[in-house]
Image (tube, rainbow, N blue to C red; front, top):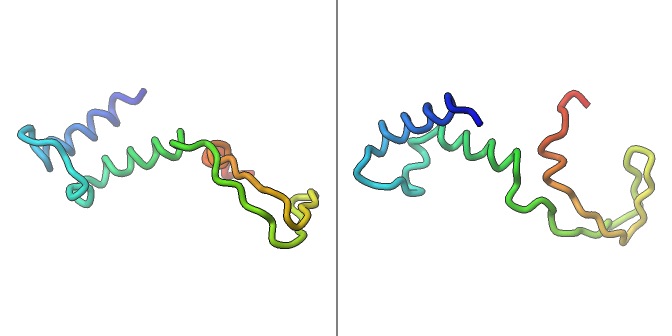
Amino acid sequence: MNPAAQKKAQDELDTVIGSQRLPTMDDIADLPYVRAVLMECFRYMPVLPLNLPHDAVEDDEYEGYFIPRGCSIVVVCALISRMDPRI
């Protein structure tokens, strides 16, 4: 969806890796822009949209909601990663 970012990532790959081999995990330290693009992709669309459930270890309250001890809590990572930081 962003041809300029794709071109910049491809240019970094061509400069660091060249065209004679595929990149490996050993190359990631030398590819900061490609790594940033990948991290943004994972933030925007997580591989797993839900986290594993956790149990509340004690009674708690969050934004006016009572959470009783032993209650299962599931974090929806896909929503958290897209929350407006101004909220």
